[in-house]
Image 1 (cartoon, rainbow, N blue to C red):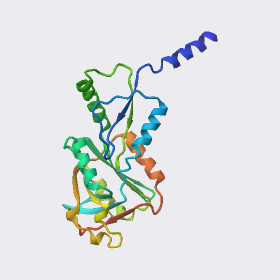
Image 2: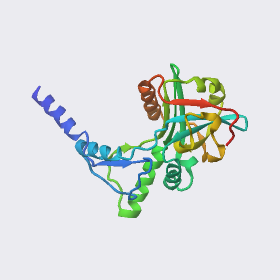
Image 3: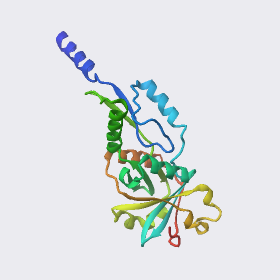
Image 4: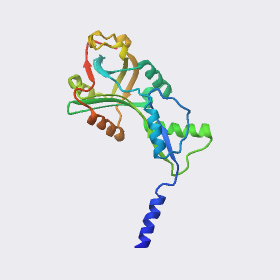
Length: 238
């Protein structure tokens, strides 16, 4: 019995020997040194998360469904939309469609639209940057902890979405636009929106990452009715 216990402790002790690297993927408006490495423990991770949460951007206050080429397209309404769009261009090396996927999911009269980074591609870029900046590679056994924040809209009221649901899911991709909150009037509603104010992010394929879908599920769990507001206005064209 003693030897068995010793073996168990030995296995536990050898479970992870490599360094822990905090991989910060896409985070709205956050910039940093490429290839920066952090060996962290759980307390340091929480401190970093607290710091990242100071960059409170990316959560949309509304979603307008416009019509483009007879297909529905989401327009996320959020603060600092132009800055967020410019940062996405910078982060994605001017190729947002190559670096992001769009996720749409609904249930129980709730729905979410999420633009999330390709996490594998982001991690591969970190490996390349580490080789270029530090002239080294990550040792075997390295554990990567990835932090990111997507652009997202989630609501507990899916009336507008439900009118377009079949057309949305019939597509393989969605074009995505942003609109700054200052260019939207709650009093005027969607009828008062100037389509020329839309910021074009590009066309994004639907994502398939199961882990991100679990995150979207959690967003839907947390969504309240009425939650944030969604609209549909087929008279608005980007």
